[in-house]
Length: 364
Ligand SMILES: *Cc1c(COP(=O)(O)O)cnc(C)c1O
Image 1 (cartoon, rainbow, N blue to C red):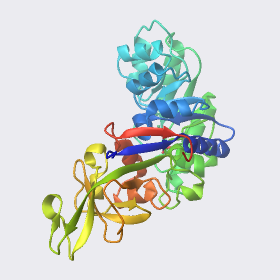
Image 2 (tube, rainbow, N blue to C red):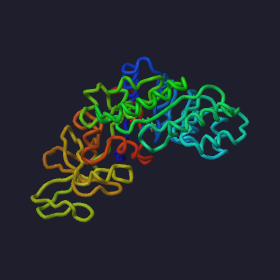
Image 3 (tube, rainbow, N blue to C red):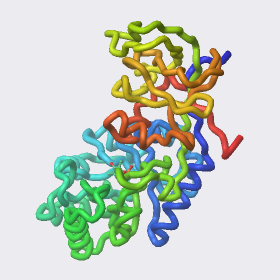
Image 4 (tube, rainbow, N blue to C red):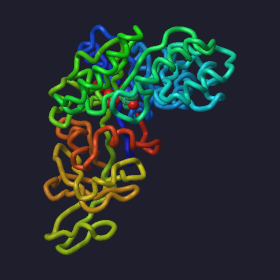
């Protein structure tokens, strides 16, 4: 009996979602965002399956190097940029693209002597999020400095990031867009602004390059619209196995702290998955799983390796049965994210290396 958690990754669904990006943003080039281990799906396998993506985005240098080691050829953009001369040289050696997110990073690029020039660089412009970005009034100086150094060959683009693209109709989105477009026009540079939510809802923001993340993995960036209604297909189905059955009497407590107490005689099941696999502990007493086509509740606290589930209405359940944690018709990850008071991004990227990933194409 196989009794460990498996993330089943449907690469055909991933490619379908990529095609949706191309439909929405037909005139833009695409940098598929594969940071955080491809949102938990496996960075290398995701990048290989998205071979028609024009480029990839990662957060950090180490992620970019992982892709180069796997012989991924496309441009790879490091969204947080790099902060030491050594890392800048590594980026240049591996033909990686950096985003200059602060004036300090610009100074580093100007003052370091690289043995090879950087290509396809970006400047992150501050337009309203106040996370990373160079303010518009410092842009002139940054662009001049970067144009002057021999460390950069090829063009530089302007990038920014929406803080509220998931809020449909929020006027701050238009403000951020106006700011970046104003800069792009003034300096006549390429623009990248749109994440998934903006690709789906702000066509004016598509510009030269779009940066889809969550929609590639088949999740909705909006609280009020399901992935299904956006024609996105779930990529990850997370499963594990029923490893024990307990018959409880009224008053029996379940799990750490006795946080759940049976009020009548009933059957519960123990499933081999827990927070040690990255299954969110906020799903204690609130999660749902599917067993034999029934949606049933998680009972008590999530342990490191196990959860307990309600089998009262699943009479035929037996040890060895498959349990689906998310990613099937009855249980979209977005609804589990709501149960956990979080977003699909967190649930997906938390799934760690203890969970084996199995790749397939479509229904096989
Ligand atoms: C993560 C990230 C994205 C992708 O966002 P989604 O909401 O997952 O589409 C795009 N741009 C930047 C700068 C990011 O950090």
